[in-house]
Image: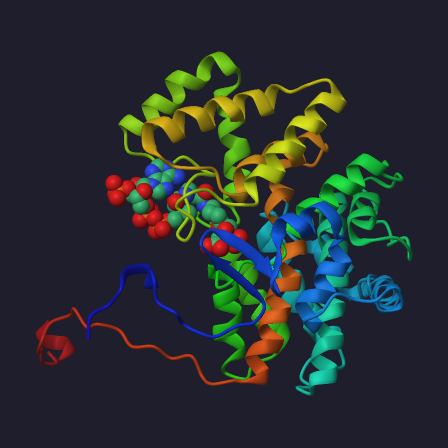
Length: 370
Ligand code: SDX
């Protein structure tokens, strides 16, 4: 038995949800470029869950259900108020999602119908959790969801208490479309491993949030912004990148396990970053990002991944840095829950083997002899 480090190249399941073939990403066979240009996030969530694009009335019904389920149980809001100052936003989300299960009467109902209802509920409530957490930590009262509109609009509204403008809604919505699913990424795998024990959907999504939090995965978008802030101005880019590469340190937002010729989502985020920068009259973060990309690509051959330009996009939208990874979670909740539903449909316990590297034999030494 020989281990493959990081399971690289191992095909661990079949899935009909999303594919990465020859560097092209599709959701249910539809190229991400088409979806990014034309679809709204709710259509994509429907596509991931049900395997087809919704009709007009199916989309309206899903939006109605999402809006009807977006409120949080009062007990969960009270718990968020008790989180210590300085709580990490992904830790807060992980805890709150786990706790939502306690207030869902269907939490342990494993029927297909209940599981799809829970997927919709989770999708509806995750944005509300993040917005409530963001306000409560600033001493502000959480804002109830509007009860209408889409997830992008509602999230921005619950964050600020103001009706967001059309450009901001469309930009966030497109970012949500781009992050919704990505084959067997680490957090989706974590979700599938968890529910393959026939544990519940809340446990699966809680596992996934824990996996997404790490800087090698979803946490990279925050780390990119921290890097841009640390660099400060475009004049400092060259020295910073050279030093990082010389020291063999990782540059956040670059590289990918599967894509070696570039992440197909990055160009959409790059374009958005420029457009939003122009609209707000400040392309500083975009300009710095382009210079970093040029250097890293020419010196190291690494291309930006989905997390690189999303950092400047969210910053230009006025979103605090530590909410970037939670926003990734808002979107990926659709993919996680679609994968969980698929896992239940054709389940087998996921239990691989380990290549043992410990001592061949050893004997127990009684405590008083050690
Ligand atoms: C996401 O998989 C998904 O689907 C994830 C995702 C999704 O949609 O869910 O696409 C989202 O998580 C994007 C990735 C976000 N992470 C980062 O941006 C962190 C920085 N990137 C890297 O740490 C790295 O590229 C990973 C984690 C993304 C991939 O890691 P691998 O496949 O294990 O590759 P590796 O670390 O073994 O690197 C291979 C080589 C090494 O050089 P050598 O030792 O062979 O000389 O490439 C180098 C690495 O040092 N390298 C980098 C680098 N990424 C790889 N060097 C500098 N900076 C980097 N970012």
